[in-house]
Image (cartoon, rainbow, N blue to C red; front, top):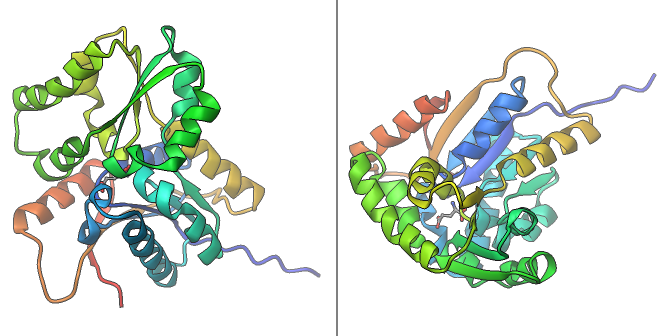
Length: 278
Ligand code: DGL
């Protein structure tokens, strides 16, 4: 008799902060039986302001450590910047399937009517060869404007709970004006953090602009991989835990901890505290 050993660890999601949470939501809604571990790499935030080598080194190192700690069956790199610079290395290093998030240029090219597309992403993603290749391969017949919007990343990660709706609108208003001046009818949210401000962006940009992201594409790819490899949990209700990657012997500002606790709660995750690599 052949005994098939199936690894049924959790699905692991990583990002530099809270950006990957909307991607986790898709998994919760569509793969409700799965256990999830979400790690916000606050120690290395923001990825978009580091060098490509640093991002790759830090993300691979974290991936290795999390593999040992949680024995996940699948890793979702819920971050465009980390995917652009570390996906290949992660796939070489880790013995589990790895799914990345890359800017949804292909989807944007499929829906644009005036062939003018805006991409909002981190500086590192905007400057990447990876993005240039995506644009060449999938949106060669469009005019594409890639904009480094690291200030939205910081705003979402650091200030999200402080400003009122009106202040958010003002900050994002600068971006929407820029996008309107460029007369784009489709905007790619090329950084996972930006999914947190979709309602504000929709309101500011109006109905004539379509926002696209990779959320369902990434979720469907994860589902497909789990099914192909016989790794799907088919019973029960999965649980999720949220960790903040931080360092030994120091504490985050209590307000920041509070923020992570609130986000964990908002996304139906248990707050697991700090993750410290050994
Ligand atoms: N959320 C990440 C992304 O999708 C990056 C944010 C950052 O750390 O700069 O690009």
